[in-house]
Image 1 (tube, rainbow, N blue to C red):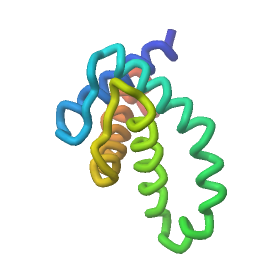
Image 2 (image 1 turned 90 degrees about the horizontal axis):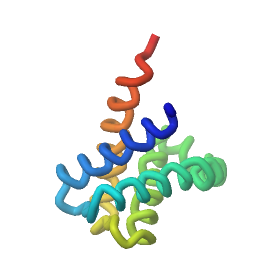
Image 3 (image 1 turned 60 degrees about the vertical axis):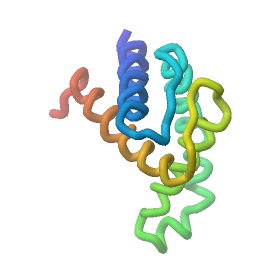
Image 4 (image 1 turned 180 degrees about the vertical axis):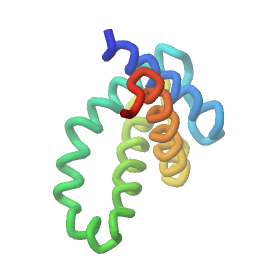
Length: 114
């Protein structure tokens, strides 16, 4: 049940990002649900491999390259899905940061920190 609630909250976060940033478009709540699912899968499966492969540049940039990885994955999902579109790289950077902040805030509502 908690997994379903987190999935819905991440979809709401994606809709909020689309509302706040004009360069990100989500067609409907169903599209947001599917995009949140794909974003979660990509972050779970692809992101660790990319972080490991780019570890030297991440160390040199003191971790700032992780923003680039998050933005590229956000942009990739936006280019693959039909109901979720990201207009460019800088919109992806802003969208990924805002999505992380909003989804983190919403998930703290159901799992408050100790």
